[in-house]
Length: 383
Image 1 (cartoon, rainbow, N blue to C red):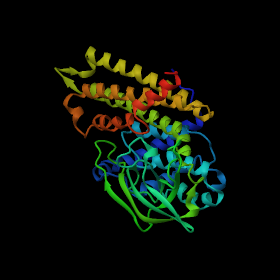
Image 2: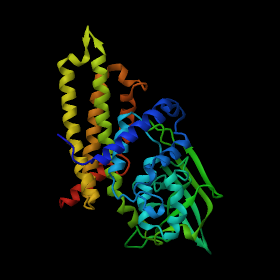
Image 3: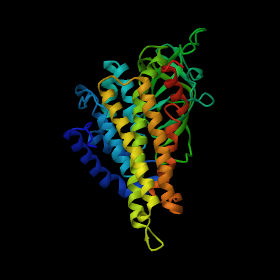
Image 4: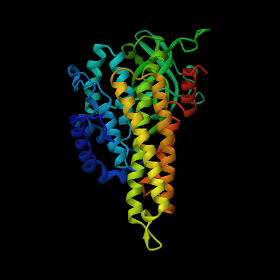
């Protein structure tokens, strides 16, 4: 079926992104994969391309286009090429909405030029060792001291945390209330060059190898009061407001991974010969890929419908949870079946299917586990 979600303008953008990836990323990607992170200059090149400024208001150096469709296209094209663009997704999909919604005019004037150019990359630090999805249980603290806050604590699983120049850190500024343990959390935009800021281990993941994921620690880090984002003690409510977009982004990534798996597998089975004929000629291969394509078609429809709803301001938390749950589970099944059609070669990292297999697993964990998504959906059903 013909997709109607993207216009001619979007398809022109797709061509630009595809050309950029083919010339600036693919020739170097194996080197980046081996190193475990993208080079810092990739981000400034993406900034020059205009990727980071699409949703930034014109008065702050962006294009002022309020749409998630361009991010969806970037996801589709990067995944189609079998690559990952490091912390760029967190920079523009997770951090930017907080800045645009909560930032003061003075803050945006300070931060947006570097944000749009890619010269100042952002990350967000929520999760702590031992708390996992229980954000209300965080122990990182920020104590007011004159015109500064003093930040102490630790975070883990921070995507983009190694190369980030500034990080939105969630910290407790007040103890929880007896009837509201979510109260007392605030958001701070912290300069990573601050004294007492430390990047610990770059975590060794089974997938997403070029996405630098770090442990962070803060020892008496002095944060200027003007770098508080939004109102003090109201941070938890802010975190919930961006979850639908975050989960839509994960759903799109998972769908794109499944679509890429079919693309890579079709090419492989048409080329690979067994018993004197191509693997594609066997009925089992045809049946398996046909079943996979059917699932991907359904995931595409779910994503596109959710994307239209999001751009119209109508994507609910339940809708996003449903899209994430469905698409990530589809990706898991499809990529597993596609790897099987590669035989032993599918287990080798030199083949894109192996990397997709490892990369997609985390989509059922981050942004809220599949179990959390089911809980949200069940609650909406009155269960």
